[in-house]
Image 1 (cartoon, helix red, strand yellow):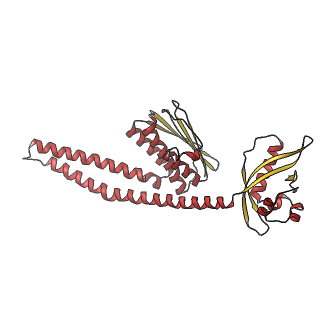
Image 2: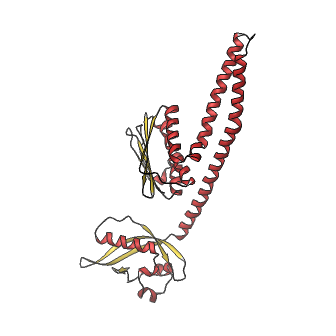
Length: 322
């Protein structure tokens, strides 16, 4: 507990051990002596809101710097102490989440590395398909076309069969080209996120029948390659869910650039679904596509929101730094 100015009033033994100070240091100390600059600003904002009866999201995280220089991450729940109806201080219930924080950071690092490796593998396979498989199919298609054109003395049945083979080869060629583009669109490497998103919308409209439009708001930010690819994959997965599962006839992608943030909204007019639990429970609900999108958003340090109701379509909002 501390007064309105942050001077410590009392604490239990667990708090003393967590902060790493003596009882004497506690009673002569102030909360600001142990908070990082960012944590101190957050503490001031929370103090102001609580004294003004404004809502505060709790519990919240703070970073404590101990006397020996080590850092401890704590999860706090704060309440006001009243005396005769007037606020005189704050009571804080804290939980040490340092190890959990480290584990989450390690997990995020490994996930980031796995995602990066996955993208590199997609890029490699895409290039191989384009440079080898597609070119081989192009040569085969031309040979069959030439054979059809120079078919003197060939029976009509043979001509028809060669024509069918040429059409099948051309169809396979188009499919492999689409697969190569799906794995790694050339537009995203050459031109950036927005051209790749427009290309994706055109492809979805062409091959799924779901009319897909793109709206851009604000001046485009320069995004890192990693962020651009992650956002593209999020939109790609969202549209894949739309045409595979929603039964929608139209979808809209809105990309909004706000100061140092990028906000993306994907909305469809499909059948929607009933949301149960939190965003973090998506994997448990077998919504692996949405769970994968959430993981990418977290790697970018952003937030994702999903709104859906049966018969009212689905709206996915992604808000990330950059």
